[in-house]
Image 1: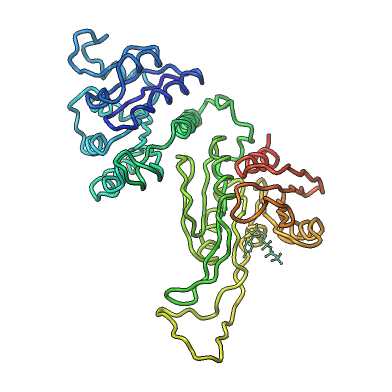
Image 2 (image 1 turned 90 degrees about the vertical axis):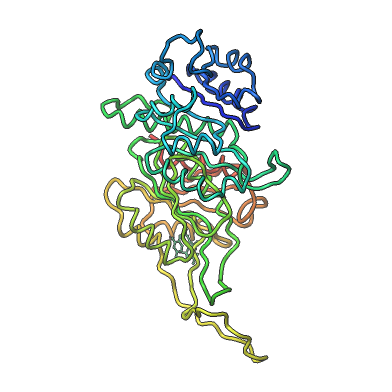
Length: 410
Ligand code: CTP
């Protein structure tokens, strides 16, 4: 593929050559387009050397290959990624301004996929005008790799760091896959997927649920959401569109194939999951859903009631997994999780039958390094036919890839 890499004037411009190298190593042709300010941070010689092509930075340079270079580059490129994207270029794009080489090229690219990797100080990122511009660009189909949290060049820390080049590279791949599958008649051009391409849209639930007691208190659990987010990432990387329904968590997901719905309670998760499931070919429910919720919730903060204690009556929440098991149609796949401490295999197998699942992923709390909050996990995947597959202790990202490869393989 021919990829245009735009670079604007932020300190993260020093990472742009790394992105260019990743793209070249993956076999893409790359041409760089930089703003005048970007060249304060990264030199033309660096960009030309890593891309293997002439840099385009001046609309009126007499040594440009064409007099209307922005138009010929628009025809050459299959997509464009701008990394870093400053608030300035985001504002120009949202307003349709073309006053230099990069902004005129972006204006002319309206029919090609564009991916932005914003990078700026936290207050600039949170600025109402910047957020409005981002919202508008999203609404017209521009993809955004959200900035990460971390140390910023201005000495503070917060949201605003450009996503790492590896992450941007993954997003470029996903965008290209999206484009290839949208190019209708091409049925086999999406080659690097090892999941069955029948699984185009997959629902994933993640995280804990919070069940409100009053205006300031809730019943929750220790689930971090890491396993579900890792599953969503693994699926998205392989080209699936992911509907991620998550309970409260601090985790972020950047992949353009992941559509996130944030919920708080089990009933909200139930509503979102049952609405989305009919349009998905598979669902993996990894959320730690509260089995019970307080019968009554107060809008205000409940006052202490003296020394005699307090009794909370709990009522049962709907079982999302079992409900999807009843809704399941021919051709849909349903995967659940089980967290067991005793008679693990037997209980998990019964759960698989009872909830009409195709696979159940058994987490054992007995394994050191597995379970809530930690970054590693070890699971046994049990199939409907009684087959089992146990992973070693792996990172949650690796476990997610194993689950996806095992259950949704060709
Ligand atoms: N689950 C769900 N909705 C609920 C409870 C659980 O979708 N209200 C899903 C979880 O996401 C997980 C699976 O069901 O995929 C297993 O949940 P678990 O709590 O282990 O099983 P239960 O059926 O609730 O049984 P028990 O608590 O008795 O083990």
